[in-house]
Length: 415
Image (cartoon, rainbow, N blue to C red):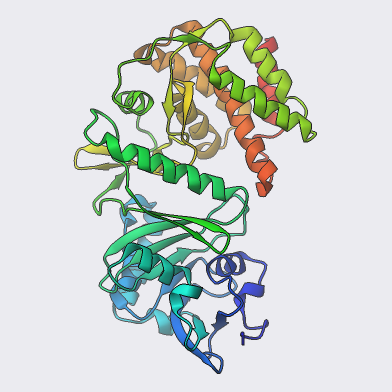
């Protein structure tokens, strides 16, 4: 027996509906806003819906005041000042048990006699991690096929146990898989000079068609990297080389990197999105003889995925990481995303910032003028193909990058 659809938030088309469907997808689970569990069910969890059902932004776990407060206060130093202030105030309410009285309550119940771990993701993750029951907080954002619900997992006394990223569709499941593989590989790099610290992978779970990676909590005292800080060149090189000496430069033509781009571009053209094959062909024609160093990259190296702790750097969100790319891609990405996301500049201006940053710092990573231009052009093609991959998987096009980025690439190749 399930709750009537009129009271079940999973029937909603907004962010609350999207998140509750991801977390409580089994039809045997009853989810109601207010009220008691249906007959034959037992309550498994309760959440405060903050600030309201119609404007939900967060699900706070109820039943353990310290866990409720921790879901608001943990890593608050990484957030903007206005967000910190609001969360601090809400955390104070939660410490005294007021959250459940101030905000609407979402009740989750399961059939009597059925183990919670069979039906509820949080209970399943508690089994995977060991150590007893867990309480989960979750942000609520507008439905987006490119976003992943993320659970903050806490013990009853407020101790962080991990972050669970949920890959729920064709676009996000591969990203979770990539990050899990990257964290497994990076675990062996502790102690590599200048390499940023990375959270450990704690568990990887397949659940009801979803792919979930549980990642170690960040250090409690981690602080954000200011967006005005210059790029950390030594850390970028450590990520690219993974403690090894610089690899001998190889021509772009004939490289596994260019071969991969060609395959992906052909797939894009085959889906009716014209221009990718021409872009890769122009890249090879213009820069094929240019020899560059190949290595790894983080894939989303931006200030908001970096932190400072104990005198060193911490990096998270490795879901776009990869190997066999020209060294300098993370430096290019840093410039491109700061312009595109932080300053709201169009793609053409962001591409110009890539050129400027590579010109400024390229000699420190072994890039001469020809290599800098090759890395910039190759990066922009890589970014458009990433945009296509996500769109092809059902996430939709990023209007800031398509179709305008292909136009930018074409003009660069004929300019």
